[in-house]
Amino acid sequence: MSAPQLVVHHDKGLMAEAAAARLITKIVDAQSSRGGASVVLTGGRNGNGLLAALATSPARDAIDWGRLDLWWGDERFLPEGDPERNVTQAREALLDSVPVDPERVHAMPASDGPYGADVEAAAEAYAAELAGAAGGENHGGVPAFDVLMLGVGPDTHVASLFPELPGVRETERTVVGVHGAPKPPPTRISLTLPAIRSAREVWLLAAGEDKAEAVAIGLSGAGEIQAPVAGARGRARTLWLLDDAAASQLPRALYRPASP
Image (tube, rainbow, N blue to C red; front, side):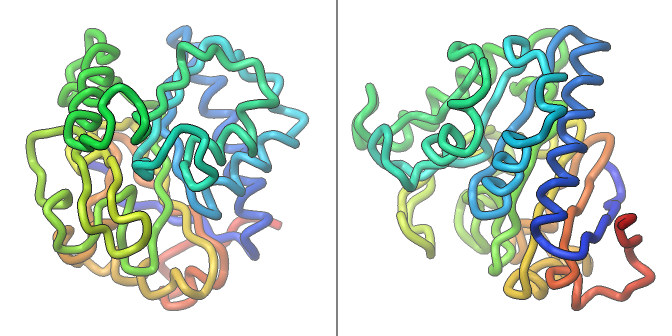
């Protein structure tokens, strides 16, 4: 697994714009070398901020949107179209304004979908979809994601893997149903740490003073059961994209500020 790399931007707006530009480059490079690209999106204010920045970037047209597979790291188990669902927010921020192939937008099941209120069945179905797209490379039953993005929660959670809850202890399954999440809604679907660690690159996004302690804990060598963010690593690269406020509790020697 890769050692973490850190890039710190002055504020969350600059971080979102730079991360969007970085993602465009990564997608275009993957499509050029392999014919397609596979990206795992994250919700929350930083994930949606990145998507909104990508939507307004003049470089977005460099992406062949028809050859891009989009997945999610987690989802709120709510009815289809609910404004709190990550996929709903992603459509509003970006996807409705670009020519994505609907068949390659792999949303997690909704609570009013074919599995009804059975979140475990919904999680199993998403795991099966991932496994079906895994292809020749065997990285634990999921596709070889080019980039997997995660927001960092103030309590150190990533995706919907919360400290001490059963999901963060999972070592075999790629997707789990989450019950009793400490932030609403309590029922969710999430990739597990083994699935996250299958990605070529994992990008951790954090902006704001309320994320500073979680960032410091995540980079301090903490255990992943108590601090799930500490277990989020990519096979080739683990990149922390921060703003000054989120990096405020880190020793400055640990990171390089972004260029103006």
